[in-house]
Length: 200
Image 1 (cartoon, one colour):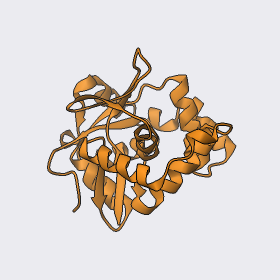
Image 2: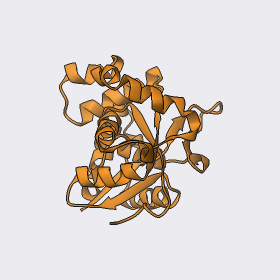
Image 3: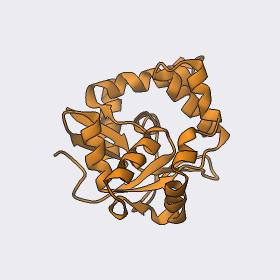
Image 4: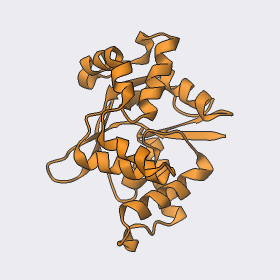
């Protein structure tokens, strides 16, 4: 199976453009690219499930704007290929999401998330799209227990700033903690070492 996740750190743009910073600079996302990238963010999604997940997230985000939820499979496929080509998404072939995640994170540099209220709202929508109960979804607006448990690791990652924290600097046990923090939406994958992007 092929598993996908997003690469990059979302930035606030003065002109309202959707920008993502990766190890190679800042790139603008256009049209449906934004939706595909957000669908892959903070998760490892199996190829056949990406389109349906994106459509569900769009319906949650724009409940009274059906024109924003009508993205054809052709446009979706084009945007996904473009994200992969530009290094804004990565794919790994593996039997499980955990195996793909471990392989990708070993070659990654990560950065801490600094959430705005709008990003917390999108996170709330993401939890809801995954079928989480309302009580769980509301955690998007609260400090998570993992932020206390892995306080020192988060401090070390934050200390690297925009340079990114290389996963080569930590051991196997801490890699598990990083994966947990990523899935809890507390870290971005800022970049993945060239040569490790693609299939096993």
